[in-house]
Length: 475
Image 1 (cartoon, rainbow, N blue to C red):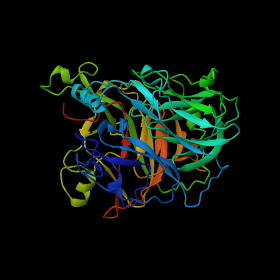
Image 2 (cartoon, rainbow, N blue to C red):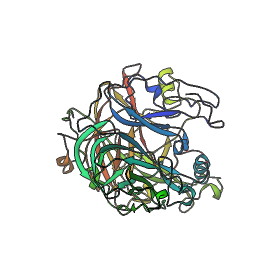
Image 3 (tube, rainbow, N blue to C red):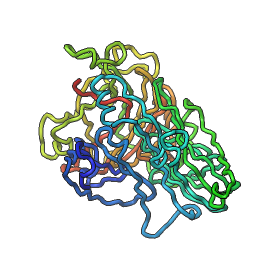
Image 4 (cartoon, one colour):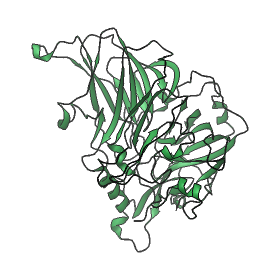
């Protein structure tokens, strides 16, 4: 990659979902695995894709540049193979989010003021908001289909902050893959994709020739402002009469769920085709995931504390709000033994147990701001309970594990109970993903093997939660 376009911003690319075995420095998040590429500089990404097929995606992993710099990454075997009828063609569908502003300015304003960032002005399908927005009504994306043929849509949610529902009017979608894993096929009319998630669906041209809306809009789980306009594209049959022939083209409108519908109605239907290799003798971790409010620092102006009641919005896991470094990456500091960059005392369980999804005491709303990691032994078999909280507001939280796939063995609502909820574990055919969505005021349980060795046969695993709000920085 040569850094020519971003003339004023340093940037890195992340290969979202690629298993970075012995190539952690090609993973992409700035100041985590490497320092960003300076304007005018260049960096060559070298990594091996092995044991993966299907669709992933790449994106900038520097501040909010991901809002504009991303694309599909389609992986095929040397010998083309599908565990379902071969589709006539494949079409990537990238769902995005667009601001009528420089997204870096948007997040910097939020970081400077401590308030929530401005919501986006539009969602996009393959870069276009489409005909419900005046700015792009003439540039709506069109996906062509022949009557009777079956196509494969590779749908990617590249939106920065928003889970999205997706549908195609009057057509059934047969789900066959999630991220780079095949699933037992099932039929649905609506997909729900958390930020960073991907889904493969088969669609058959079995309707009357016309233009059918493809559409996506927000799944808004939090009590917070959001962009409530629908983005669209067209699925158009090739034998549809053309407008220039003087015949009006029918446009068939879609149905989408309510903004606050339940995402688990879709996610719990995903079942892997291969049998589970979930292991016993586990390293057990319990991470709370949620928002928080930092008190206004002493001496700070009121303009930098525009969160509720003069506070600053933040996000945390196990009451730790991540502080991004700016001189050395964490991986560099680990390999070179540079002190003072991070500590290895990230808590394995919440420092204080409380009613996570209930009426949480205000004394627990302020996290500590640190750069902490949790170290795992190479080969450790790890289970992580990801518990959402109701601090400030409950919401659906996307969680991505860089360089790994994992099993999602269960999810549910309320507080996770090891006494009763373990009975819900799917240890037979749990879906394999690289990103999960923790249900609003609920929990997810994931399992993975820490098999990406470092220099000292130790593996540092970094788990990121994507929030509306910026990590802790100095105001």
